[in-house]
Image (cartoon, rainbow, N blue to C red; front, side, top):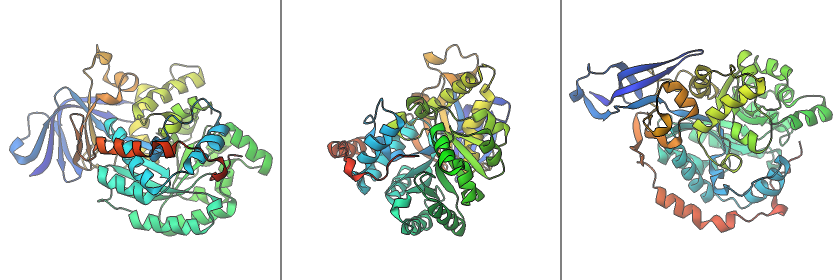
Length: 442
């Protein structure tokens, strides 16, 4: 007996240059994996423990957020209309001086609830108090790659502390939780710290999640000070020898892209943050042409305001068209490939998530395309990229288990989460400039 039958759905299939929609198909789930996909009408429903009638729905892979600071939702709306320097120095780092472990636990739940409702089943998170973040992921039933943010100012002992976190949570929650080393950036971590981080990651058999060349000002500053781009610094310190998630890359030079193509690196693109902070844009097209994996991301909600990957998808597609001055750049199939298989590759899980195929993990979302904003539905794939709202996601399945059914969260208590977060709002909104973690000075 199989565990779950999803019947009567359309199914999105993505490739490098084309997409397909399978009409009227069923998905069989056994345990935490997709067992089979076949045309509707062939299955004996008595052989399944649960049946979901998905008539009128599109089944697609759960969305993947390749770079975020999820618990930062607790500061949402507190750093608006400021430059990137003020955003860091006058707002974020002073605000984060108030941060407590309990804030991360409830903030992570708040962000996970928002992402589940938006069809996001997997996130790469880079923040503080990550034991509490892991506990929230375990409760939510979602999938996460967690890294504890580190700075040189923490001292080398922080690397050992993070290493203990990595070992504590690696492959926890039936494998839904994986871990990674997370030095913040080349401008906040000196070469000794980066080398030590790379060494520890290699010892533990994990990768690196790091910000680098976030905007062109950082690249210019690094070249002036050191004669090296941030990407060249990562190469010289051994970071690039490991599987790396590189956040943003809006300041990448052509020689950086060529360099990245030689290493196991994926780049996370969070376009709404770039627009809000006037950072430029990740050279997505050039990276993919060079063979570098690119995935979609939201970054934190203080620079994005939402954790909606559908929003990131359409902004990424349109911004690439604008960058190149051509509406023929970043086609719908390519955009959907980035949102699914590309993002899975950045996460190091290309053969596990990002596709609906037998043997893949059963991370599945059901999307309702019957709303007025989709009509008339001449093209399902065009509607996915340019029309879909987070609220169109009806049902979310992670690891073979239903975490949201018909827009009702089954693993998290929204009322309790909001109440807990609201209790701390006044304290969290106090900026304490004399207690900065760092100063942004690339």
